[in-house]
Image 1: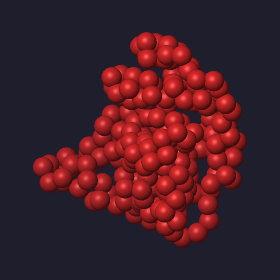
Image 2 (image 1 turned 120 degrees about the vertical axis):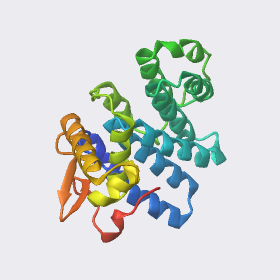
Image 3 (image 1 turned 90 degrees about the vertical axis):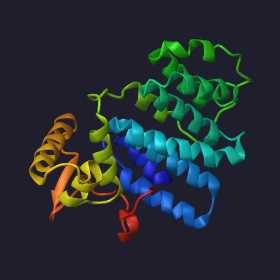
Length: 238
């Protein structure tokens, strides 16, 4: 996982969804809850960077649930503050405040730095973050590069629910046009209407994230090849 973390810091403009899915599945094989939770937080972060907040929240919730088995750890508190940020981006401020109130009581510098950034972006959290934190200790689990990455992160155009769902679908595995039509629209509409709507949906996503979606051998997928080698990287954390 460390070399992928280093790669994401060096090239934050890239996405690593397939890699994080692969790491998550490998962690599940070992049964190590900390590795599983960290990989889910990282996968959530990749979706967050694309503006796919619904998928980001799905994996952030899983990460917090798994890491709560070691609630005093840095990975647990980092997962909390990450989920807090996603909640804020979804305008779910009541849930965000609950995460902030819990995370601010920890002793990890990086977590407090993340909270400060979220507070600056979403002042509504001020009341939650004015609690007196415990004495800081340096966390060596999550490097400060993740903090600077959030500072310089560009804000992509707001993604609709259908746009987010399509990106999540092709992020899990490659899909045919028929797969996407069935998952997104069911059998409620005629084939011609679905064809038109799916085409417009893909055009909107490509306008917001040029080059993100590729069409290869009759299947839609995320365009960038995974950083990791190996054939098992094509699964998903669904």
